[in-house]
Image (tube, rainbow, N blue to C red; front, side, top):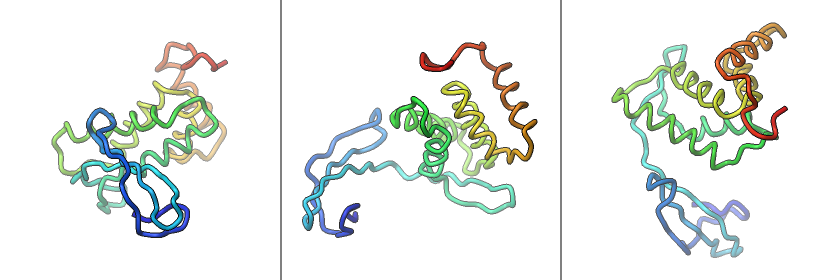
Length: 160
């Protein structure tokens, strides 16, 4: 593990414990060079393969989903823990299906479903990239779809 500050590969583990409902190991580390402390998480590597639209296959990457969620939820009142829970839920649902391969569209639809329950603005942001919106009418349609799926109430107390 390289230190995020100085890049040194020399560190020591200060603390290690189960995290994320036992699905990860959280480790506190200290760089032996600059003494910076940082946290890492270890997860079980998924053998699940994602089949892209063009037919390419790549390993399921939880960080890729988390990155997309973070972009969609930027400046929204959603914690990283909530996003981690969404990723964990999606990963569990895909693995529970028992398939070795899953279509990328199925992963995208699970992300959309999770975001629609979490935050309407994040849902529309993600949909705009996922569905490659080209026109303002595409946004209007996504908002309409979201409104029809939900109960019309704000997803959280800060929503207007």
